Amino acid sequence: MNFDFSDEQVMLRKAVRSFVDHEIMPNIGEWDAKGHFDQQTLKKLAELGLMGVCIPESYGGSGMDYNSLAIVCEELERGDTAFRTAVSVHTGLNSMTLLQWATESQKQKYLIPQAKGEKIGAFGLTEPAAGSDVAALQTTATLDGNHYVLNGQKTWISLCDVADHFLVFAYTDKSKKHHGISCFIVERTYEGFSSKATKGKLGIRAGNTGELFFDGMKVPKENLLGAEGDGFKIAMSALDSGRFTVAAGACGQIMACLEASVEYCHERETFGKEIGKHQLVQQMIAKMEAGLHMSRLLVYRAGALKNKGVRNTRETSLAKWQACDFANQAADDAVQIHGAYGYSNEYPVERYLRNSKAPVIYEGTREIHTIMQAEYVLGYRKDKPLSHMLPAWKG
Ligand SMILES: Cc1cc2nc3c(=O)[nH]c(=O)nc-3n(C[C@H](O)[C@H](O)[C@H](O)COP(=O)(O)OP(=O)(O)OC[C@H]3O[C@@H](n4cnc5c(N)ncnc54)[C@H](O)[C@@H]3O)c2cc1C
Image (cartoon, rainbow, N blue to C red):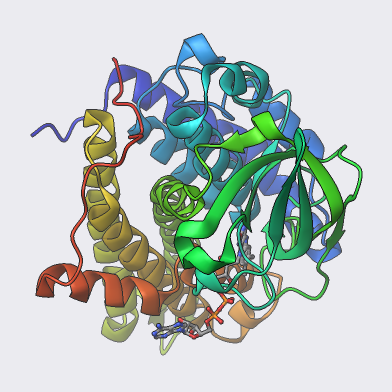
């Protein structure tokens, strides 16, 4: 076991922290209030090589290990959930899935520009009537000569208006239930594609989320990812990567809650002393500290398994479930510590509370992860190595 970060990882954390402090923190209040997703910031993240941090250099990435991706997500979410979500869908759900499943020519065409940050990737699984129950999706793909023709709709898709490429899941054979789902690489420019942002979100207001529509959209046959019927497995393995980034981000959310709360504890006095001297306030601070360290251990353990190329669905699910719950609790406590001031946007903690809710819902709700963990323990669920594993980190 090695609990130390490498010099390269320490430098990476410092660089992302400095970026967040200078480029995100000063603006995020305004972006959140206006519901503005700042694409310039995404471009700057790409210039720093942060959109493909764990993708091998041979495919345009920075060639760092999977825990370096966790560091990026942790530090980004210390600033705001929106940019961490962008990295989660672009790198975690899309690029890492291409690395795992794509053919060499698909990697050359789609993974390289994504890893360089020249093109942005997203992930379209959820539909109006299919969230946790993936097999309930209704989008269809019918083979017609050299193309598949896609009809249907996706909802709650992060980067819906921003991404250039999407992984889209559709039925090629409904009679086979989840064995009949296939995955397609879709370009925004395809005829029959359109998107629309969702307004009125509780949190991640500085992010872009919304619907995708496919109206007789023709997708070239060579854009099928994996084989026909591999879609469900591809989606679940993509979630192993995405959930890891969400869990890491939750650690950053807890850090942000701690920073704001500690500062306020020293600033605010009641009954003749700093509120930090009251034991019930200390209890909330202590819970945040414990949640941060427990979450980090789970996240970096899952990352160590990814580095070895070992299946880690169970460990990643546990990390995602626990870290997001701790972050949601930490944000609730951060508002509590700030009293009425926490209830206004004069302080950032109300944004943290609003932002901390989506990660408890997306990439497997709290309830789905609870069930998964119980099923592993009870022996009802077992994982086997996949036909295409996420490659181990070569070092
Ligand atoms: C901000 C945001 C961004 C998102 N980005 C993306 C994206 O980029 N791509 C994408 O594909 N999706 C995305 N999603 C969608 C997200 O993954 C789904 O919302 C999530 O999977 C839950 O599905 P649902 O909302 O349909 O809830 P449902 O599945 O309808 O669940 C409703 C409730 O029932 C509970 N429930 C459901 N089934 C069970 C069960 N078997 N046992 C116990 N309880 C159960 C759930 O836990 C939940 O509490 C995003 C969502 C949000 C909020």
